Length: 392
Image (tube, rainbow, N blue to C red; front, side):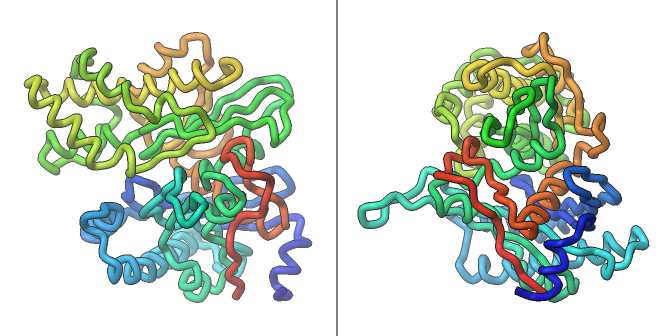
């Protein structure tokens, strides 16, 4: 073990940068936090959008029909460089020297996630693949890097997702209030924190699509001129088509019991194009389709709470890009009228920064030797320390 890592294990206060690129593949979220015990303070946050050509290349890697082995190999290292550049730019823009940063926690970019597994010999093997080579990040920045968190959970029978419940417990658990933390990124996931609960009382799972289908419909109906429904303006102009909504709610993932996780494999381009064809057959206007798929996201969240949570939370804490969609938030509130709606901003964590902050916390726990998966959320056989450490 390097002397630098030994020193970090003993430090009371650490500065950690968390890096996140989600299923929407629109850029890198970079958050610098200061962690003292269980106190987490966000110092700097920045989003570094991908150039259009790089984003298209990443999305091609997520599609079986377009992914090529040599491209997966190539872009693993390309993204390592891009992630490292995000760290350098974050430090330069904030005037904080890289030498003052103890650690980087990088989620990488998921290009395939198969939590149901595939049979090999007599066993079913679950698998996942995140690219963004951490060795490149560590060498370019000179900062010890922790990455590749999902496989450790899968190695002990878990689904490798959701990963953020450990961080949610650190950030938001309360002795007297029952809370749900609802992230709405490309995929939506919930962390249920019972009042006064311990880590093994946490329930967490993917509720279904978040922005993924909404974004897909906006791109299709705008012919690529728009990539998302800013502030929910399009959906606010439309009317929900109940017949199409009912068809979407038949998706088998929604009835599957937790632990469960999902991604582009179930709610990506193929599903979006299927719904688009159904909408065209019914001659629905674009704004009506966007309203309908927005209602679908809200309904899947509310249904998941009713079906799979032991009780309704006192407070719901929203984060992720979907929390900016006013129409989606209003739909969600109408379906959960008894729940107080908050956002991570109310706790000092930017809506957009929260997942990047989570990976900083996960990396901190790894270096401290703390188990940072939540078996009750992932289905793992037990607690393990996630992540691979690349020392410098």
